[in-house]
Amino acid sequence: MPLTRIATGIEGLDRMTGGGFVERSANLVEGAPGTGKTTLGLQFLVKGIVDRGEAGLYVTFEEFPAQLYADAARMGWDLRQFEADGRLRIRFTTPMELLQSLEEVNGDLEREIEEFCIRRVVVDSLSHFEFLTDDAFQLRDIEFRLVSAFKREGCTAIFLRENGNILGDTNSISRSPFVVDSFIVLRYVELDSAVSKAMLVLKMRGSAHATDIRRYRIANGGIVIEDKFDGQEGILGGAPRKSRAQAFVEAFGRKR
Ligand SMILES: Nc1ncnc2c1ncn2[C@@H]1O[C@H](COP(=O)(O)OP(=O)(O)OP(=O)(O)O)[C@@H](O)[C@H]1O
Ligand SMILES: [Mg+2]
Image (tube, rainbow, N blue to C red):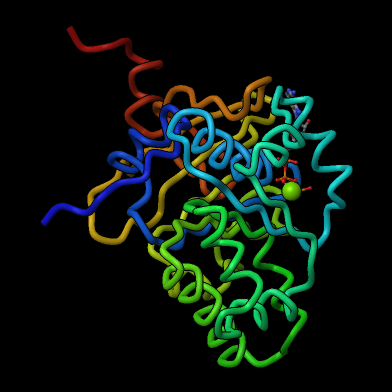
């Protein structure tokens, strides 16, 4: 039986993922500061509310709601109105509190998810759970419990994660991708003395996905995915070079 898809509503991303996220899946979006993680998360919720009438929950540990409202307003999204309509819930909490309220039988979070028929969840960010323990196994257990709890509630979730590396080097990426169903990386890329942003789907459980690296920008209305980085190698390293094929074409002209 084909998996039901939850379209993110972010054009380009839905094409890259073969139709969106799998229903009731956990999806990790990792990127350096300012790459647009919060924007992507909010856009996923706003698109769900506006295009499909699906209610959303935004969990934040760091950004005060006032800041979130202001950032969203710059994108053209009136979060207060969505909240007033009962279509969006924003929770400013701590990792420990979130975990406890999710695991409590008939806890307030479970009741909230049911009462408001919440289908889409964003947790900003998974990085904060790293402060709970130094032990890698314990952290993986915590992340697994978190991911499972939202699935159990029937939600499709995005977990944002900070990656301090501004440019390049994927080696520092944590082990969290193992507990999630899909993994998207946002990167800064230096190209011709300018910095662009690149998006890549590294993992998509249960389906094919685009493996090319896409350029994107942040605009009013959210993330806009653009063309591929054609003829470049080393994008993931942050400092691309022309592929040998591209260098050949430039040196000798395209073969007729
Ligand atoms: N209306 C807008 N038009 C274009 N760019 C914008 C707009 N609003 C914000 N930005 C850009 O979006 C980026 C911030 O996006 P966002 O807050 O989603 O990133 P983030 O990855 O969540 O950052 P952090 O790691 O700090 O939480 C900034 O670089 C900012 O310049
Ligand atoms: Mg953010």
